[in-house]
Image 1 (cartoon, rainbow, N blue to C red):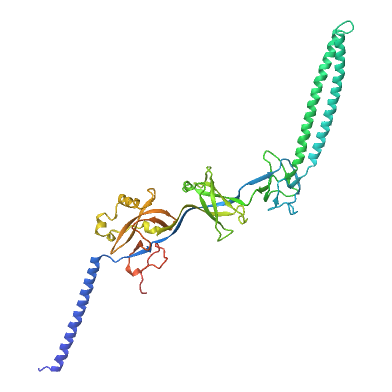
Image 2 (cartoon, helix red, strand yellow):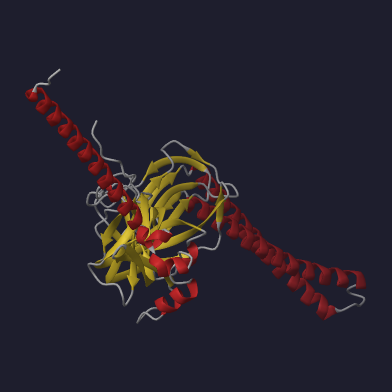
Length: 444
C-alpha cells in the first residue's frame, strides 16, 4: 500500500518535538543537580545577625529597693500617767497635729494634773511639818545644853548626885542627835516636794527640738499609762531638709557597696524624676527572710524642696561603674560561640575554639590601659565566609551592653550576635532582640 507523503511528514515533526522536549527536561535536571552539588560543596547557607559597635557612655549599677526615712527622729513620750486634756498650739495658732512645725520648748499636749497638784500640796505640808519639828528639836537642844553646863559646874557632889549628873549629860546628847534627825526629815520632805513638782511639770509635754510632727499617736481624752517603757505620744522629724534611704541589698551585691558611693533613685510618687544620694553606712546586722540574706544600706540625700516625703518607697541604683566614651557591644556578642564550619580550616584545627583560653587572656591583657583583674572575653566578626575572634577586655556591663577595650575593634565594626539558620529567614529588623525566634517566610 502506498503511504501518503503528507502524513509521513507530520509524524516526523511530532517525533522531533518529543525528542526536543525530552532533551530540555534532561538538561534542566542536570543543571539542578550540578547547582545543588555546587551548593553542597560550598557548605550550608547561613545568615549572621550582627550589631554595630558604637561609642557611648555606660552606667553599671546594682538595683535595690528601700524606704525614705527622716535623718533624725525623736520619739516624744510621757513620764507620768494621766488623761490627755488638750493639745498645744503651733506657730500659726493651730492645734498641734500631723505636719505641724514646732519649736524647741513649745507645748505639745497637757495631761490632767489634778493628782499631781495634790501631791505637790501634800509635799509642801510635809516640808512645813519637818521644819517645825526641827525648830522644836533645836529649842530642846538649847535647854538641855544649859542644864548640862550647870551640871558641869557643880560636878558630882553633895549638891548633885552622880545619877543626876549623868542624866543631864544624856539629855544633852539626845537633844543634839534629835536635831540631826529633824534636819534629815526636812531634807527628805524637800526632796519629796521636788519630785512632786517635777511630776507636775511632766504633765505639760514640750517639744525637745525644733522640727515637724510626722506622727500624733494620742487623742484628747485618751489615758496614757507610764510603765517601764514610756508611752509614745508624738514622733518629730528634726530636719526634713535632709533625708535617708534605707535600702535592702542582697548579700551577693553588698561587697560592691561602700561609703561615699553615688546612688540614683526614683520614687513612685514622682514619676519621671530622679534623685541622687551618697552611701553613708552599711549596717552589719543582716536580716534573713525566706532564706534570703539582705543588708541595710543607709543613703543620705538632700530634700531642699521638700518633695520627698517620709516612708516613700524608693528604687535605687548603686553605681559600680560609670565610664564615658567607650566601645559598647551587646552582651549577646560576648556569649556567642560559632560552630566549627564557620571557623575555617585553621579554626577546626583548634577544635572549634579559635584561640585557646590562655592565648586569648594574654591578648586581652595586652590591650593598652586594661587592668589584669578585668574580665577577659571575645567577640566575633565576619571574615569572608568565616568568622574571626577578637579578644577584648570587659570594663563593665549594665545588663544589656558591655563596655570593652580592644586594639582590634573599632567603632562601626559589626559583631556577630547569633546565627539565622535559613537564608529565607531574612535579616532581623532593626532594634529586634537577638534572642527572638526567626520564622521561615513562605507562601500560604
